[in-house]
Amino acid sequence: MIYHNIKEKAFVFSLIATTQKYSYAQGSKVFNKTSSYKFKRFLDVKYKPNTLLRDCIETFVKNNPKFDWSKGSLIVDDTVIEKPYAKKIECSYWTYSSKNNGFVHGINLTVLIWTDGKLVIPIKSMIYTKDANGEPNQTKNDFAYEALKYAKRLGINPKDVLFDSKFSSSKILNLIYNNDWKYCGQLPCSRNFNGQQLKERRFQPTPQKGNLKGVGHVVYVSKHKGRYYVTNATETYVTREQIVKEYRKRWAIEVMFRELKQCCHLQDCQSLKTSQQRRYVDLCLKAHTQLQEIKNKNGGSIYAAKTWFLTNQMQVKYNGDKLLNGFAA
Image 1 (spheres, helix red, strand yellow):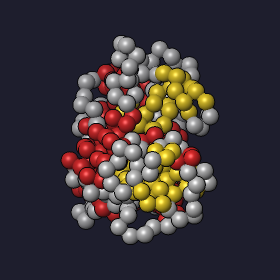
Image 2 (cartoon, helix red, strand yellow):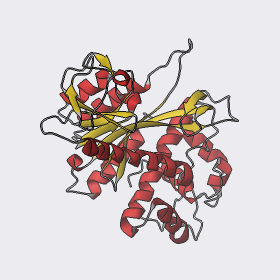
Image 3 (spheres, one colour):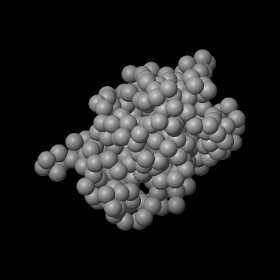
Image 4 (cartoon, one colour):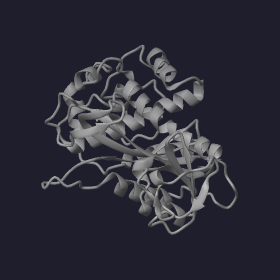
């Protein structure tokens, strides 16, 4: 794993090594002669957003000379970092949570990842914020649009792009098509297809070919268990089962969110500033990438990788100022 400095490496390792609820004090206990204030001060330092995630990308490409972006999918989705008792955090708002089937107070995080089912590489992340007038500085769809353009600039050419109905705007669908990428996602029932709302149409077991309002290319639309699916893979005939099977690969990002919360303490940062929360999120994503490296070496799951790290790497405490002499670089 690529690290810019010793402090960054120490913070990431403290996220992995801490088994209790994370705090600066708990993180400092991982090392000898390191104060909790050093961890707090590290988050205060200005940095360019998503710099840490570029390191994750470079690490995977460097460690895998035959790495092929076309064998995996780009997936965009969001999650709520619940903060029910921390309402003074700048970027925390009342937001809808599908897990709780209602509104909760927390931070809304949106992430674009690449995955082939085994590796998960974070590409770009965004924390939802508002301006002084209560308007969003950047909507989720705006972020998804910019993130996909960013992925194209990085030279990523995925097998397809997967998303749920929140990210199915015409602007995004047209961008994906213009990038010569395939996509598979869900549509809201109010979407206009062939001049009629989806909820007003009758669907057969086979996908229907046609046009979505505002989308400049032909798509297949299919209905399965009350949900509507769309793909631009129209060169050859695809069945409803094939569309749904491809869409279900999107579950990889839900698994990543769960692992971030359970193994990397995604929900534990109590810093009040948005800049600190952003950096903390990217450090959690980097910690998850570090655990993946261990997982790929030893096999098993992310949870097994964390156990291995605690057992084999943290038996002896190290001086946090001269970080982890016995650790692999």
